[in-house]
Image 1 (tube, rainbow, N blue to C red):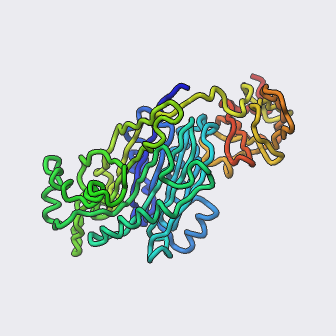
Image 2 (cartoon, helix red, strand yellow):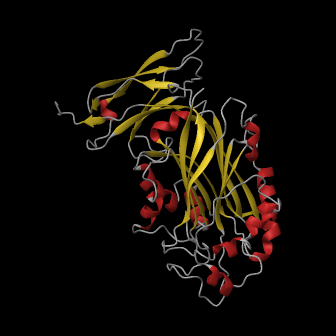
Amino acid sequence: MTSTDLRIAMFTWNVATLDPPENDILKDLVWIHTKDSPDMYIVSLQEVSSKPHEVLQSSIWEDPWTTAISNLVCNRGYVLASSCKLQGLVILCYAKMMQLPFFHDIHTDFTRTGLGGIWGNKGAVSVRLDCYGRSFCFVAVHMAPFPHQWEQRDKEYYQIVASQSYPLEYTPHILYHDYIFWLGDLNYRFEDLTAEVVKFLSSPKKLHVLREKDQLLLTIRGKRAFDQFQEGALSFVPTYKYDLGQNTFDSSPKQRVPAWTDRILWRENKVQQSQDGTLLKLEQLTYTSHSDVPWSDHKPVWSDFLVKVSSDVPLPLVAFDPVESWQKNGIHPCVYSVAPGTKTSSWDWIGLYKVGFHTIQRHYCTYVWAVEIRDKEDQKRTRCNVKFSGTFLPSDYSAKYVLCYYSKVMDRVLGVSNVFRIRAPNDTT
């Protein structure tokens, strides 16, 4: 079995119920430090506006933040593979379009911790998935506020890991996964420090003093919660609380004490280290705060990782024959092969997508039903042929398109074609 590295980038941001910025703030945040395009992109948002009418709308359409981020990320060749929302708490999981066939068993869950567990203004949402022989779990949280609720935050950690579950025998809970990432507004504060002292110590040469008073680091060192979780060096100034739209700490009459409320932690499952002959290995490449982003009263926190995975699958379960181009007339064959043992059904379909689409389920241009394969005993890939009518093809001839095979029974993408173009009916080139 061979192994390779998967690059995972992520950021967390408490957006203080504000709408997404219309200038380049979000663009600069999403793509900063991404010279090497990540294979996965994870976003954790807290305090996304959750007014009653907006909660209803987001159950049908994407919320404004998801739309704004997807417009940026998906135009770079990513697809929103999964997401989960709990009132103002959102997690978004993007994958490179061509990587989709290797992501499977994607499930989500959520936990309410507000008002003793009956209200979702605080809590956790998670996405778990398998990729290249490894299991991943991403947990986005917004935990109890205020300095005096240190013990409550520790309790919420245990509440979240105990309550969330997935319908899988080998990873039924968060801590069973190979790689776990915990990110969001954890809301841990400084112990016994005033606002004036924290502001004075918020410079690169004095941060070591603040680290000694950070509640989360004290919790981890004392093994009160977050057992085996790790965090990169806190080499950036506290990320909370700022005047809205400014880069200055809170100057209101309340004078909130600044803190590192926004964090990204990770955990490797040591029990799984050698079961398949390859070792788990995670390397954090970047851990920083973007203190120059003047929008919310929190600053976004960014990190990216290299994660070792096994990669012994040479082909996706469904492989498309190359498509040169289609024309908006006539009938166009779509030829593909299905790996032995692949579960198919009469509800599987092949969709045509414009490159830059957000989700598999919502954003197809047109589709056809796939061929159902039954009672096949030989070990060769089965070749199948379906047809697309040129009449139903889109008329945007400047765009690029791709085909995706979606399995209803497996609830995942099994194959992605090459990128191609659609030509006008009178185009003879």
